[in-house]
Amino acid sequence: MAEAGAGFLEQLKSCVLWSWTYLWTVWFFFMLFLVYILRVPLKINDNLSTVSMFLNTLTPKFYVALTGTSSLISGLILIFEWWYFRKYGTSFIEQVSVSHLRPLLGGVDNSTPSNSNTSNGDADSSRQSVSECKVWRNPLNLFRGAEYNRYTWVTGREPLTYYDMNLSAQDHQTFFTCDSDHMRPADAIMQKAWRERNPQARISAAHEALELNECATAFILLAEEEATTIVEAEKLFKQALKAGEGCYRRSQQLQHHGAQYEAQHRRDTNVLVYIKRRLAMCARKLGRTREAVKMMRDLMKEFPLLSMFNIHENLLEALLELQAYADVQAVLAKYDDISLPKSATICYTAALLKARAVSDKFSPEAASRRGLSTAEMNAVEAIHRAVEFNPHVPKYLLEMKSLILPPEHILKRGDSEAIAYAFFHLQHWKRVEGALNLLHSFRMIPYPLEKGHLFYPYPICTETADRELLPSFHEVSVYPKKELPFFILFTAGLCSFTAMLALLTHQFPELMGVFAKAFLSTLFAPLNFVMEKVESILPSSLWHQLTRI
Image 1 (cartoon, rainbow, N blue to C red):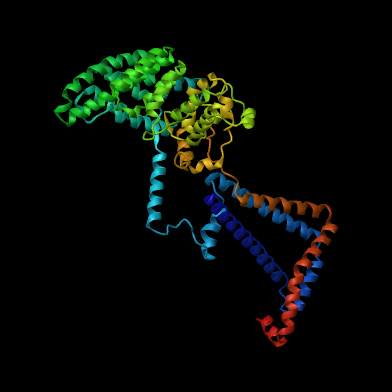
Image 2: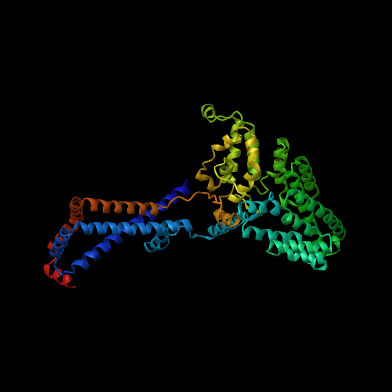
């Protein structure tokens, strides 16, 4: 609350500052205009009478031109403010007033650290922001040839961005290559193939490598990019598994003979884990879900330390398809730990299980009358936790926003992760009766969630990263939503007001002329009074010298 109050006061200060600056600027230029028109070096009373006479002789056309010009200038300012806000997410006028005018008027920049502790805190928060915006490999990523390319053939749209595919190329080079590849011709060819940008060049290189040897990574590339169906991809992965197991056994025996053999064994381990995981995903996509679950469990037991592949998220999705909720809870008990990194799959699956216990009997009206039971409170808290971790997911689960194919990489707590989760888990939420109705109450995310209650404050870098990961035809979900700055509303009101004055002056010139003269007379009355008092006190010779100057 204190932070919100301080933010409101800062915004109010900048609004008042800009309003005064605007009014004084208008007044200054108006006076310059009068001086330029009159240019009569008379005494003040004579000068004021001349001004009054000049204003009385103005025609309605002058007022129409004046109000029309003011409306035009306000409209141009409004268009510029709107463009700047859409591009940079902030108001240009507010930024200038805060950055330049406030220091000139003696304001203090609250963002400046006052001591070393504040500096350390800022450094910690910036490091946290960088870690929060780390891009992760999507554990449920689709097959390029059998799924992504088929989408392109049907729609003519590219579902993957260059940035996303470039990250995948880096992953492949990290997982599937090592320094000793140049000693084996087939691996040397594949090392170059993973760096190729042209898909056809990569596929040709993989076929060239297979002509020399049964290369596991060549089969992987063909299964991922050349196979047009999941059945073809599974056949190629089975061939890759046969070649990969042989390489793994050989390198396992030699891994302690030196750093070179150890690196080769690490590469062979990554290749084998990747192949088995993709085979399990093929089985899941082909409807052999129990077989996929068994393969994933065996893989997690055989390689318990390779958590970077996040195989438990594949397992959770397959168990939910089997409606084995007790097994899902057992997996969550192991991986939904405070010391382990969270994900939308972990948080929303935990919320789904809590909601499943009460959703079939839950009624908002009844709950408001009798209060929430313990189970309902647990379900609401679990959903609140999930929504705080990733506030983009409810829009897709409630089908308020259309889904697209998930990218190969995701940003945790971002729109890309929400798409990847909802793409595979929407059916599981629909299967639990009443779960989506319970989630529906969280469709309007309260702004305090961005401050962070159960997790770190919501990172501000997600929108930029998601725009790099998601295709251009998708409208990126932004949280928290950007509100229109005060100055856009102020300029819009000023433009509308002056445009209305111009229209009324054009339609009713005589009546508006009377109003304008009365307004200007009232405006100059205090100045006339002050000038008369000053002139009566000071000697006339002094005024004569001042007017000559």
